Each structure stands twice: as C-alpha cells, then as structure tokens.
Length: 377
Ligand SMILES: Nc1ncnc2c1ncn2[C@@H]1O[C@H](COP(=O)(O)OP(=O)(O)O)[C@@H](O)[C@H]1O
Ligand SMILES: [Mg+2]
Image (cartoon, rainbow, N blue to C red; front, side, top):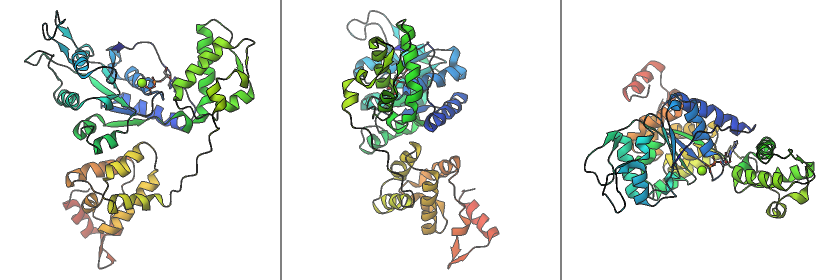
C-alpha cells in the first residue's frame, strides 16, 4: 500500500491525450467509480492520481493497492484489516486500506488479477460500504471511499470466460477511461522525452542533453512495448550516460536500434465495420457489450460505425429498440442501459423512419404514442 502525494503531470500533445484530459476533468467532477484500462506503463496510475487530485476528495487520502502483488489472504488483510489473533503474528487490530482512505480514494491496480473469492468480497464492499476485518464476525465500520480501478487485461474477455465476475465488472465500470499504447500516439514522444530528460537532468544535476535528429527519428518510430515507462527509463539512461551533451543514434539502447521501425497503421476501413459487427452480434450471437461496446469505449470504433450498426439493426426490427436489444444479444433487462449508452454518445438514431406498416412509414403522432408505451422516450 502506498499513499500518494507528490504531484504528477500528464504530458502529451496527441489527440488521444487531449481526450484523456477531458475525461479526467469529467471524472473529477463526479464521484462515480472509474475503470482505467490500457497496457502496462501507459500512465493509468498517473490518471488515477490526477482524478483524485482534482476531485472533492483531494483533502483526504489517495491510497493505492496493487492487487496482483499480494496473495489473496494478504490482499484481504491489506484491504479490510484484521483483528488481533486472527492469524499467527496478528498481535493487534489493524485497519485496512479501505478504512484508511475514508472520504478519499482507493486506487486498485491490476484488479483483473483478483481471485473469485476476492471479487466476491469486493462486490459486497462496493454494494454496502461495510468493512469486515479478517477474523471478525461483525461489521467494523462503514466507509465512504471512491474506487478507481485499473487493469491491463481485457476484462470483457475475462468476463466472457468467467474469470472475472460480470456483476463486479459492471459495478466498477461506471466511467471507463482507456489509455492507448504509446505506439498508437507516437507524437507524444516529442513531448515526453524532453520532459523526462529535464526531470532526470535536474535529479542528477547534469545539463539537459540535446537529442540529434536521427536519434529522435528512431525514438519516434520505435514501437515502445513498455510504453511511457520504457521511455522514461531510456531517458534516465541517456541523462546518466550522455557525456558530451548530445545524444546520437549510437547512444541509444541496443534493443531500440535493433527494432524494426513500425509500419504506419493501416487506414481504418469503416464502411464495412458496421457490417462485420452486425455479423458478429446477429449471426455469431456475440453480445453487443463485448463485440461493440468494448471496442467503442476503447476507441477502436467510431461513432459513425456505431450509428451505422444501429441503423442496420433498426431496419431489421422495424424501428423497435426493444427488439433490437435482443437482436444484439443482450438480455431484455439491458434495454435501458443500451439506450442510455447510445444517447450518452450521441448514437441514438431516430426510430421513426424505420417504423413501417407494410412498407409505409407510420404517421408521426401514432408513432410517438407507440414508442412512449415501450418507454423509449
Ligand atoms: N502522459 C504521461 N506524462 C508523464 N508521465 C507519464 C505519463 N504516462 C506515464 N508516465 C510515467 O510513466 C510511468 C508509468 O506510468 P504508470 O501510470 O505507472 O503506468 P501504468 O499504471 O499504466 O502501468 C510512471 O513513472 C509515470 O509517471
Ligand atoms: Mg501501474
């Protein structure tokens, strides 16, 4: 467990980072749970800290727990605390992280790595806010914490394969914030590298080295499997090693020199995207939530793709969103959630034009009545 206090910045000038900044802003104004997704080293913890620091909870602690670093038993004591005598070595009562973070925020890193039992405990906590310390029979306290969770796993797949509880997933995934890997926003290298070079130069009290243009070109095409964390490490090495104040290609780490430059990403073929998604949900019976929602939230598909998919479905169901919910492989109970999701992202397509009686569009007034009855307005 760590209590995080030192300030952080989110550096980057890419459109992706601009979106993330907006989302941080939005998340810090409300108190909803946040799920941050993205590969290791992309900046998930930075984002969690910025949300907390800008939120109403900033005067209270932000506590981080790495769920992957502890065994189930240790994680349980860490989170919920324990009572004296509950295990060998438990000489006195101890409060857990969740109590320590009362009125503040808990950042649960690698939440995708938790065991089924731990997922059950977490779910119960999120539902009640109640703390039951290890070894205790009763509820010790009721706390008010905001949970920000992070994972580098694809939780949608983990839910599909039953490795992660779907009820817990829906509970923590109120605001989802995705950080793309650095290789998909290479323009950020030009902002991050000088930032880290200056930071380490100050730390080691050496002059800030300058980077030659060919070295920079290499850095800006490297695929950065370790993301920003890797770039930060490279910057530290360069500061420590740079002798004459200039960094040339020969000063770069070997693995960077050996790597093949990244091929530019293939342009998205969006006209057929809706068709292939339609295939997946309607023909292959995949759930809308995994086939469409997840890639949409992680920005792998555009609003236009989503609208095209919805239009295709409405054509099929004669403009009926309730039937569409089922056609897209969601339980009927997800109807409201489906509509809210579409509205929130401005992808709710007007149904009127799809409502027909024997191929003729219905008149508007009759239509509004019919639609109001099913609660879609
Ligand atoms: N956009 C960014 N601006 C500044 N520093 C960043 C940025 N993204 C990541 N970092 C730094 O890179 C390292 C890895 O980031 P971290 O948030 O721990 O990644 P993750 O939690 O996704 O594994 C940290 O030292 C962090 O401060
Ligand atoms: Mg991390």
